[in-house]
Amino acid sequence: MRVFRGRVSDMFLLPNRGHVLQLTEVQGTPRKGMTLSMRDHQCEIVEVGKNSTDGKAVSTRSCLTGQRVAPYGHVLVDWISGDPAPNEMHGHWIQEDIS
Image (cartoon, rainbow, N blue to C red; front, side, top):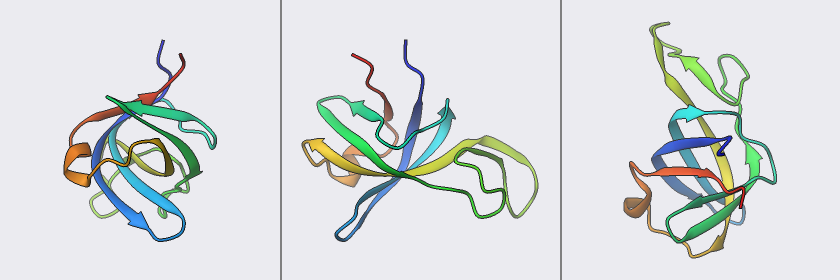
């Protein structure tokens, strides 16, 4: 059973730190040290982001309109296997690897 997953809406590199994955449609809560997988790629969460408006790792409200949106958040990851290109990640699900 998968506990955490999200759809990748964007990915970018923070030099000397790792890749930031911006996620939408998040289910569950990310944790530092958690291993995630997508297709043939695996990564480990190095840091969990906090939304600047509510301080949560996973948020459900837009900071500008106050309207509810699909749960979203971001994580900083270090790739364990492979280093996918951003266009390879966009729109795909990444999920906790509990195997």
